[in-house]
Image (cartoon, rainbow over all chains, first blue to last red; front, side, top):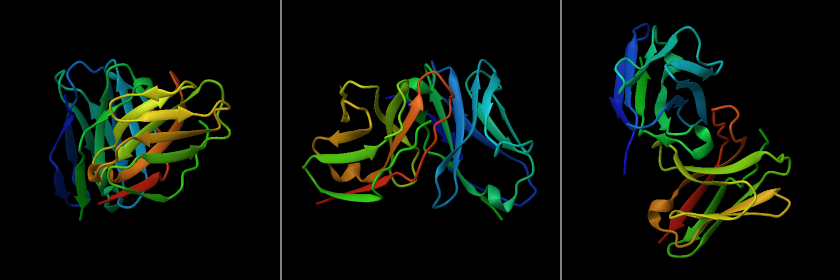
Length: 114
Length: 111
């Protein structure tokens, strides 16, 4: 079964550093998403991306965050200057036809900001 | 999107059917019911969705009441690997792309 692949599985970074979380969506999917889950809390939407642009973003997704699909296969989330409160599991997801038909999520990257 | 209510937890014996309830009394006519699950901090997994007819796939069945104010996700033969947090989400198809996850319901399948 096709999978969404996320790397690395765990990343530790110092506060103030930039991090890039990487995702390889399912190859024929057109819609891409990032979610995060702070330990013990709900899964939260960050951003959706379609046709090479952001289609929707949440209040969490401020100027410190950006997304990119640099080469037609990868989908990245960049956090410019990490804060302690950015520590969370970050999940990438993709969908062939949009969220109406269900997403496939990756297994996540655990980001720890120290 | 309409709000959903799920019990916080439920236990089920391995091999038995697990019936997971969800109330969505304020659902509107163009809102679908979606179910996802999350196994121990892995990414959420899509299970099934429906509008008003009952739906079945290889993972589960979704029974939606005639008034659409509640639904039940049925795992016909629960296994230990079905232990997870199950999320019932109501949303308009074709509207916002985001999914709004609540706290969900922890299903524990016991041997």
